[in-house]
Image (tube, rainbow, N blue to C red; front, top):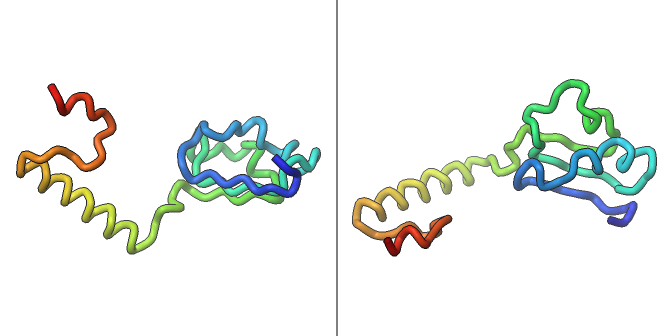
Length: 102
């Protein structure tokens, strides 16, 4: 990445190489402009985690999705999927669609 780039991860811990993103890349070598991480491999990160010391990083406790609207949408979609199942319909977005044809 460019030294001016900002890395943002709100998906899953482990997708970002935390060891490669740590303090050296963020501060000492200036290989990365900054980072915002909502997820880490270990949550919460231990007090001595190197990323906690980087001056140009934002760490959030795995709730970047959270808002009143997102919680309502999450609850609504879950209820809709239950209703579909009770009507004998398949799920809208199955993770493993091959099991639906068994």
